Length: 108
Image (tube, rainbow, N blue to C red; front, top):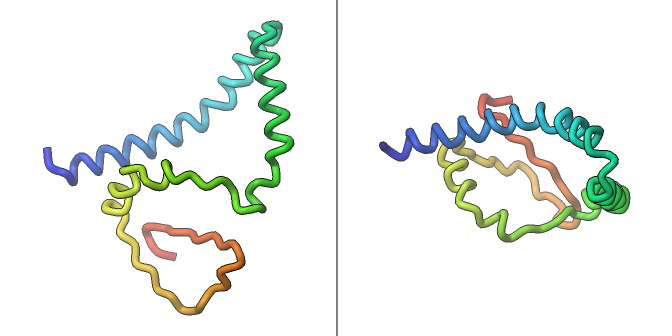
């Protein structure tokens, strides 16, 4: 099997699983929590998670969390081979500010 087919399969499976699991995760979580709500373990984990969500709600405005492990994953090499990108710099950006860059594979 050649590398192009492996990359195609990898990207397709990742995209399908992301879309499918994101639609199923919330209802499944609500069902599981409502089914096992009387369990002290589930209640404790839920309360700790809600506590974390409350105190972590402004992390994105402070630069987020940096993960060198995630940045070094080999998935990004395959991803960039499948979706080639050319960046055209038209202006110098202030390095003291945060920016969000979007990419659409079919153009703007």
